[in-house]
Image (cartoon, rainbow, N blue to C red; front, side, top):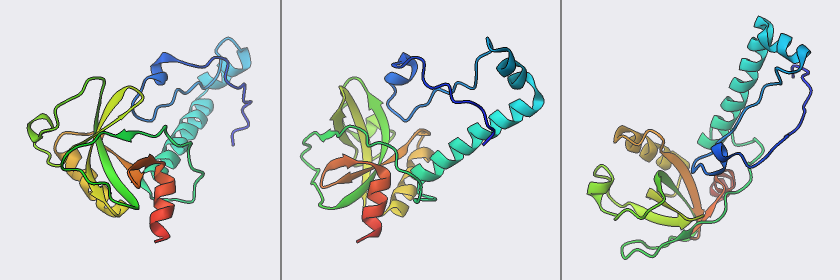
Length: 181
């Protein structure tokens, strides 16, 4: 939009984003070793353009994740998480929305006292991590309400995830499937 050249990715596998348990991005706006880019990035107009571009990208991503505008291009699906068998958990067929509240490298006993009093916490294991979710909502609207309750309980980073027939799927795909019922 601003007409800046795309210099591509010079390195990959940054540890700062490789081991995150939530969506992450590393933004590189330009190279200060390039005189023209340095001049542009230090100018007020350049800073406004770059700030606006970051804002638009974040706004688009937030709308996509929160389901405000589902016509955007879906992001690649996260590797499937296998659900750990829990005695009170039953797999419900179809698309279900849950709220992920915690990710840990070590197992946390699933009891309300370990999760600020939240009932019905489930454990999912994937990529060597333990992911803890609550809820089993048939609609995205219900999951948003649950997300707000989780945030009120202190889980500010709580985010919505989707499952189909017990397997984790991309949220955009789940929204499309849920709308097609």
